[in-house]
Image (cartoon, rainbow, N blue to C red; front, top):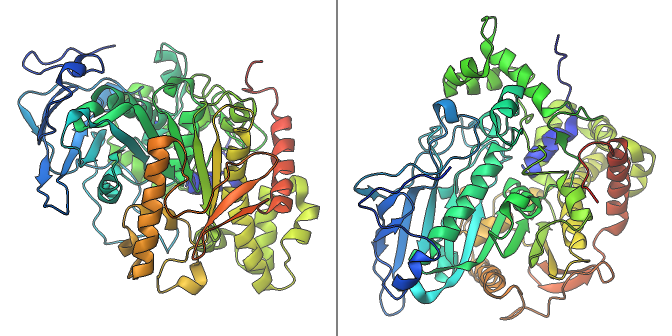
Length: 570
């Protein structure tokens, strides 16, 4: 009999913070490849573009003397539809199409839950999401390049949403494209359809692994960019991956994965990173069952009492029924389906790979906001209760190894003080710590890293309560303040311009310095330097070191308890 899974609170935190054989071309379709595209690079970028799989027709917004022409291409397939026998399979090459594909509007988003359980971020229950489908592996491109040989820096955005929700076209690349980048966003498989490990999946995979399908989608999207972005005026040799929350977790996974090596040349992580202990595909750990065991439990819940509980039977179940099972079951209605150490895409914990210096050696820019936990905390209060009692439950579940030292850094004399400390602990545990660990791990490598601390308060009605909330950074990069019912001021618009210019400058040169910024020192383990991005932009050092040291001690003890599982080979 399979035992009931008992995921502690940290697994939900991980998701919230975090919260990826050739196919012949159509005979009438020109082949596009890094080598084959070279003799056409002087050609103009037009609405009609030949890409891997066929020809697409985007849409053009003509410019004027003060505004360049913006070209957008949406819903471009970059992989085969993961349906039928390809459900939960590794990402497969795109299926060629005939004729010209209409790429003027985004395609369906991947199957996902409609609410994340945090009121500040949830849409009303009756809000209309875009159409959902398992056939969702598409991407979007924004460019102001007029010619293919402009070789503009390419910025590939990996969306957030706890690896359970979100979609590429939710953010517009218009602002960053206006500052000189070619911007790409894409969908990837999520939740139960994107991160399921199962013994039968492992057996059918030539590599003998399963899980992390969503991350394999991300690798495939980066391969598409390498092979096609020159046709949009982008430089395939200068690709920056960037993301926020689970998108930043994904960036750290791509930087750790040998399968993504060489597909990008810079990395930006905003408010998230995979530096907490992870689950393993086959080995139970002290804080989580094996991913394959969890997959068997979920299969049993989906298939119920029927005799056939095979992978084939599971693939026959409609996607809506799979999602409904997860939504209705107390065992699976949180964030159990997460990245795992699978032995191939992730040969070890992301944090362990970085600690060993095995990550991609590329210029790296990372950071977080001052008040990440203020809005997200509601998710945990709902389950653990408010005040001192709720804080004690949370801290005991998350940091049992250092429970006795917590009060000195996070005082809980009153219920109100406990709630403030809870928000601070959540922020440090889930964001401040991993972003500093990310920057610090780059120290022994050749490439430099920069750390930022975002303290700008968006002009929302709840500004006093939420401050520099989780998600604020991307709201300025993508002109997304309207989602939070904010009315930008002139100062907000100028701050957004500064942020966009800085991010694009880093993508272009590998160094964020320049423009109106004060000198931003690269982070080293010795100087612990960071740049505060707020009403006053200024440098600082040694950000919240005592609190981070407490977390590092707990995580180190937890990793030592599982030292025999999935550590990097020396």
